[in-house]
Image 1 (cartoon, one colour):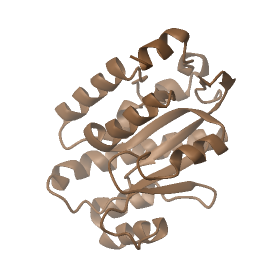
Image 2 (cartoon, rainbow, N blue to C red):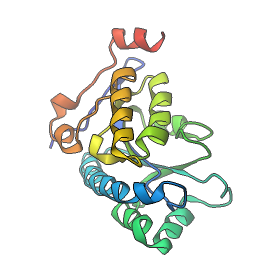
Image 3 (tube, rainbow, N blue to C red):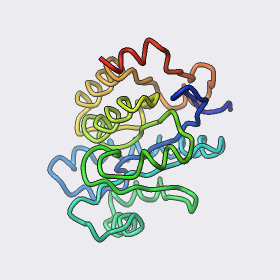
Length: 211
């Protein structure tokens, strides 16, 4: 297994981080019943990807909603999902955080909005992000937009994200690939081929990002 994808940001070789978005999820909203089986499947794929990236010493960061639960910390959210059973507990079990994983709590869709994520990524010397989680057409897309504006290279493993229906997921992935210049491929295809996975932000990319 070669090193995870790397990118050049602000002229310096940077690390790649895995961002796990809203997998610790109570699934207590309209549409959750449709999302649940797709979410568990994505979590299973993301768990394998996390294992591979951890072996390559890539930072693992959880970004999770706490809107309306301002007093809750990340551990409390994970414990709540475990108690709920069903798909919520399945995802919490598959992606149980380790002691050296990081986490941020977000009040809105993007993992960047109202959180210290950008400061954390700078501290970890990260220039490329792998986005996995829920939902492809919502929190993944909002986070990808903010990452793109900050000139992070993006990889979105198609089998590690989910939406309430497959058409929404496909449309979101196609949009992020076309507009946000994200690499959209299955996790095992990229993680197993370091040269193929590399994406540097070229001068052309930077001009496109400033339009």
